Image 1 (cartoon, rainbow, N blue to C red):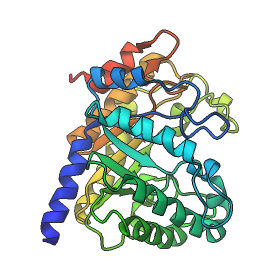
Image 2: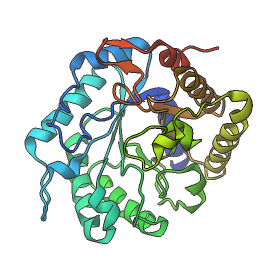
Image 3: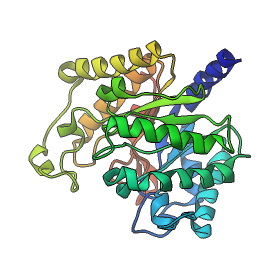
Length: 317
């Protein structure tokens, strides 16, 4: 039976296929519950383009009580229901995560019980949903959330999910912001429904040049990327991650990768295509960051795909 469950986890990971993050919508702390721009038609665009999955980052902590039992606002839950349902009705898988929980990153001991309460509520609400809905426990643990602290907390958060949803595929990644290099410090509970995730933004000075939230990023503006000089490093990093997953019998999901809009489009296209094709060659499902904002493959103002990025993601060469 355990072998059958493990095989199913690998199959569910494979089904994630090619995906895209719908970022800066339900994860936006300062915007309304719909993110201010996300519309039903955007899911049509994603499906028509040929994607299999949307990853839906959600800032639950901005819409939940500060004291036990930490209730999630009903109106916000309904907004998430709408987004999840809009994707599932179009035969898109959905990865639903906890995003931008900054207080937890800074004070993990004080906020651990709140994370568990959030997941109890989320898991109960979606327990009857089809298996095309995946849970991701916490986006990019970092800061005070060290590897030992995160390894302990992820086990308790997973247990909270399993109270009402024992068979849902659950995605977890290592501390240090899901870095591929941090995988050896990830300790996983004995649960064969787990899919391991990493994020990839290397070289960082290229992918985040000019990003306003990164100190000193303006100094990187003008950095280019070419496969003949940078390809070996990408291949080495992703191959090491795939080998770790294989050694541990876990499926692997590349939950984020992308380059900020300031980078020149030729380099963005080449880097994106190289990371995507390398992941696919290694049998890794993936989800590009992101759909329609500052890393976006889709131009919300023109209501059209940025063709170089769409082709880099979806056209096989």
